[in-house]
Image (cartoon, rainbow, N blue to C red; front, side):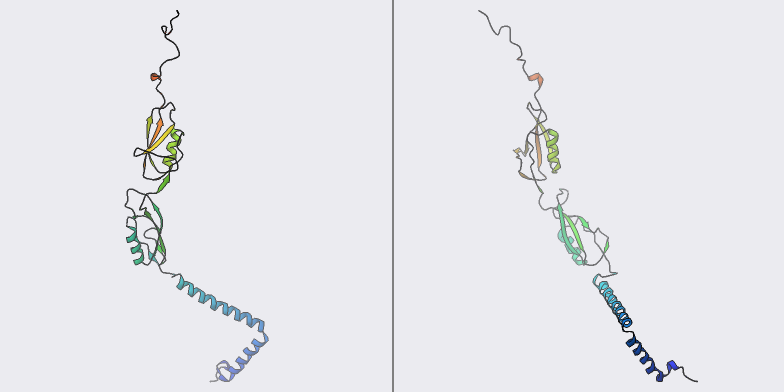
Length: 215
């Protein structure tokens, strides 16, 4: 049986020669082909590198940290391959200082290994606020000023001709002054004028019949 010319080793040098001639005759076309091949190899290697760098396909489940002391929460995150960062602190009297009250991402979320989990904890000391300029404002304005800072306000009425005018503020019996720094959990007593009772005002418009005697 006669072998096919393409399978005959004697014909292979002719094929190589034709390819070499084609390459020499079409240098621009071959350069474009080389560029495409090189670009394909580089993109393929880049994708492999990105898959390795970003841990493509790898997932980790964020543990539940709410209610834990921040030290224990940091330990749990480290043991599970996460980073930890305290993002914020809030004042809550219902929880112990340093307790985790919020976390991002939330518990049970599937994320990349090594991701940072941000925590919000109960502050170790109460937040400090500045006493507003409350003197000689209306009762409604004064109440709004203090409650807007998160302070607990109790209003007492004091004798004054200026009804519903704020005359003072105290904490534990000690007078407060505008610009003073106090803890946000301070209980405030706001003193408001009650006005003068008309029944207690003596009628001085007239004079007594016996007030003057004409000699």
